[in-house]
Length: 166
Image 1 (cartoon, one colour):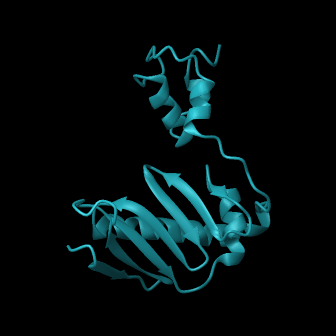
Image 2 (tube, rainbow, N blue to C red):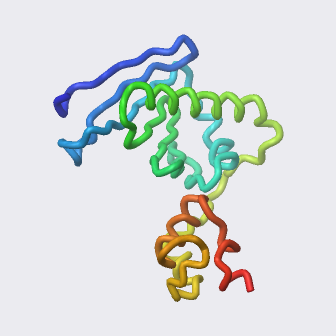
Image 3 (tube, rainbow, N blue to C red):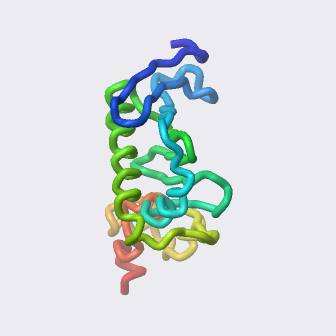
């Protein structure tokens, strides 16, 4: 596929999607997904920010960002973008997953306190600085920096480090 080409998919549900080449990696075999929503979810963004784990959001900016299994997900009023998918089948699965999440948030919004103020985000480096930096591997990861990255992606908890949990 050339840098300008796209693959398109449709859903009877309320969105369409297309795969686009990763512009900064022209020789990559993976794609980014752009999900075009049929209805605006602008009013749901503060609820998405509150309901999705590790979401970063500044109220009023119009975008919620989430790191999900190594994919960067951007949720906007009229679209959702997902990075680094292998092809149409994986893209369709991610599209359905996030469309479902949005529907669940819409249905449960009266039980969710919206994020109407800036939530501070903790960086991988800040997490790393809270670790013992011994690279002991007892957490199951070879280095403290790699463990900090797992904590940042919500794949591990700080309490999984035996040194921190003492």
